[in-house]
Every structure is written in C-alpha cells, then in structure tokens.
Length: 206
Ligand code: TMP
Ligand code: MG
Image (cartoon, rainbow, N blue to C red; front, side):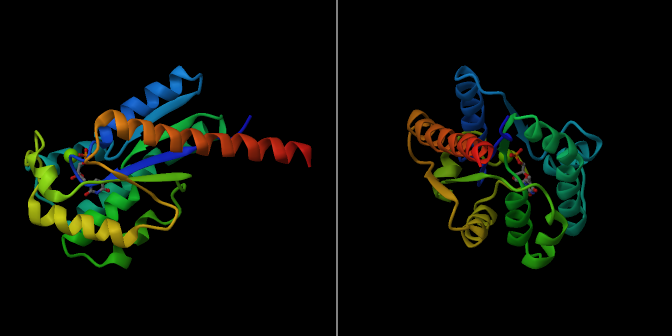
C-alpha cells in the first residue's frame, strides 16, 4: 500500500481553512480514500488547553514560551501522524509549523529562532496557502474573537507567510466562493494522491 499523503492547508485567520479541510476530508472519503483530519493547535491535549487559555485571553504567557508550546503541540502528535501515514491514511492538516513561524515572527521574534523547534517534524507533501487580503478577513464573521485577530498583526502574518512561501506551494485565492475553492483544493489533493500511488507502482515494477 502507498504511504498516505500529508495535505496541509495554511493561511491567515478567517481564510476558510477549517471549512475547506472538512469539505476535503468528506470528498476524499466519498471517493473511497482512508483520510483523517488533524488540526493545530490541537486544543484537547494538556498543552492544547494552555494554548487555548492563551488565545482566549484567560492566560498570559511570554512570547517565546507560547511559541514553544505551539511547537510541542505538534511534536506530541507526531508519532500518531507518522503511523497513520505509514498505514496509508491521508492526513488533511489545518495549520502547521508555517503558522507557528508566521505568527511568532509577526509578533517580533527572530525568524530563525522560530523555525528551530519545528525542525524534524514530518514534511507535508502538499501545502495549499489560502490567501485572503486582511481587509476582507476583517469583514468575515467572528473576526476579533481571539487574541491574534487584529488587523495590524494579521497583515504582518500574511507578509511572513508570503516570505516563507516555497515554490511548490499552491496559492488559493480565498476570495473565491467556497465551492470554487473546494474544487481547486480537491483537484490538487487528488493529483498528489495519484502521484503517490504511481510512485509506489513504479517502485514495485523496478
Ligand atoms: P485556529 O484559529 O486555527 O484554531 O488557530 C488559533 C490561532 O493560533 C491562530 O490565530 C493562529 C495561531 N497559531 C500560532 O500562533 N502558532 C501556531 O503554531 C499555530 C498552529 C497557530
Ligand atoms: Mg482562528
């Protein structure tokens, strides 16, 4: 069986990542794939509860301390994620280390320092960056509920994301309709999955 693909959706707050992740998981499942959703921060763990308390302003933490907690929250999920990929399950992941670096760097921490704790995490096979102008995000429902949902910071976060953007990233225009974005994301994901299956077949024939 081919290894599962790690499909990551990244972007600023209110770009539609969670909606698109749920739609992608459902569509892939309907097509007979084994697929699971992962989300960072994963708020259900002990570390995740501390992150949640910070994001909802019920707890204050040093910028470096919260950065490391976000990273630790990924590390604590790593073994289970690797196992699922090895078993052929695809993972659709809502935010990852790029969010970690983008938000903390936007707050003023050093980019290199921010990247260090995430070094060695399993790599995504496909990164889709849902790009939305900050003014548009602000108009969307719920903006401003959590600590980082402030215009100035989100603008800086977007700038860092665009700096981190590698050539293989797929940029999705998040101003488009939910359905149009879904079609684009599903096409990209299916193509990646086919590539993975093809590589496995080629290896078998060698
Ligand atoms: P969420 O809205 O996707 O649940 O994410 C909560 C906030 O946490 C969001 O503003 C982005 C931020 N964040 C970080 O600052 N560092 C991280 O490593 C992650 C995953 C999210
Ligand atoms: Mg949010």
